[in-house]
Amino acid sequence: MITRLLQDTLLATASSYPDHTALVVGDVRMSYLEVTHYACRLAHTLHTRGVRRGDRVAIFMDNTWQCAASIYGVLLAGGVFVAINAQTKRDKLAFILHDSDTRVLLSEPHLARVFGTVAEQMPSLQILCTHEAKGLPAGVENLDEVLADMPTTPPLQSAITLDLAALIYTSGTTGDPKGVMHTHQSLLFVLDSINEYLGFTQDDRLFSALPLNFGYGLFQWFSAVRAGATLILERSFTYPAQVFKCMNDEAVTSFACVPTVFALMLAHDAKQSLHFPSVRILTNAAAALPVEFISGIHRLFPQASLYKMHGQTECIRCAYLNPALADLKPESVGRAIPGTELLLLDENRRAVAQGEVGTLYVRGPHLMRGYWKQPEKTAEVLVPSSLSGEFMLKSGDLFKQDVDGDLYFVARSDEIIKSRGEKVSPAEVENVIYRLPAVQEVVVAGIPDPLLGQAVCAFVVVREGETLSIQQVKHICSERLENYMVPKHVLLLPELPRTANGKLSRKLIMEQCSALLAELK
Image 1 (cartoon, rainbow, N blue to C red):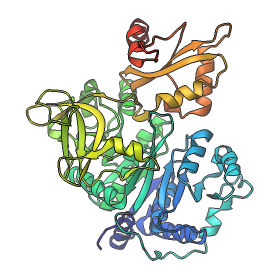
Image 2 (cartoon, rainbow, N blue to C red; image 1 turned 90 degrees about the vertical axis):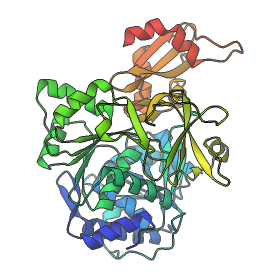
Image 3 (tube, rainbow, N blue to C red; image 1 turned 60 degrees about the vertical axis):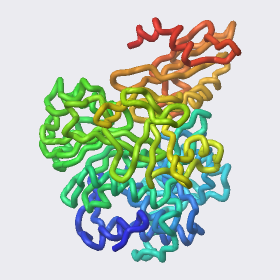
């Protein structure tokens, strides 16, 4: 079967291996045929709710089997899936649903406390929820009941490979998330490139506790389906001992991880030995892996090849290090993924010399279409290449390259903080802290952290005559932001330094507060 669309990978695998286990989520085990039947029923359901080619359908769920299967259901309906982290708070959810013009929201009853108020503001939004004993909010349809009467055969397909498949929202420097537009073509290309260098087969058992709205987590599911492998999906690492037991009980062969989780595992291993002999593929992305972790990782995963990778939502993945070089070049993220090219260019878009710092530019079919409804922002990062009629992605990341062509990350040229493998917009955190009446000024920045990559730090000036505690700042952030966005450090200062033209400068703040920051490490 020719796979021109993302959903074709599921249909092809289900045709070849219908009884093979596709998903393991807790006590639930689903075959490829069962996943396909669910996705087809959902596709027909969405059609009866008016979803047509190109319409956006939001999936606001935890890491459940319904969430994973629903992604393919939306695609089979010809829709564009918008996966939203279950930790997302009300304000951001409202923004994403409004910005994406979402027609249907798929969710779970326990998240009604978040989407309930938003739904009241969007009367045209249709909401379907999986059923739980606690019941469903008024006006929300029981998804399980609706699906029961729907066909299990795929609906007729009208999409082509250039059509949008996904809107993946990522934090922006303005404080509002940006919807990254990916087509079937871009996602299929990067999927095949990733599976080529990782070498997944039907016998592999991939393990992931990464959220499915996160590109790294999403592609664990896509990779498994493409290879006919099994995905063991966990909701989170909240109960690490349970997760570790599951990994060994399920004899996982591939483990996708971020440095924060590696740190947790190594700390646990120091108290109680961990050992995962079945893992043959170990991947790290989303944040740089500390060199100090590598020897411990080899001890925990003695049979595993370690793949260090680099990417961003706008292209999903752009570089990986050959695992044979993991110990020889522990600070490198390697070279371009198969079928693509990476360039290091200066401010005039001329190639930099070996060893010099340049901005990373990405060429290949895996580039996003652009930012949803933001042509100006799109033009800033999708820039003309030296080849007529082609665009390349200006990543905003600074790198060096060694004599062999392997890349070394230097810094991010924008102000986005990367903490726990997630992107944090300083402006978004600042906007929340400014809700406190006692706050006069606030600047949020990332400071180096051995476990988090970067720790979110808030520099706050309190209004004269007002009182404010560090706990109050953290509390309001916990109420309105995802956990990874809540500042680890809050510094209450009498004033913040400014540039000559009167603007607040993160650089000056970091320089003038260096002594205070050193005490936090």
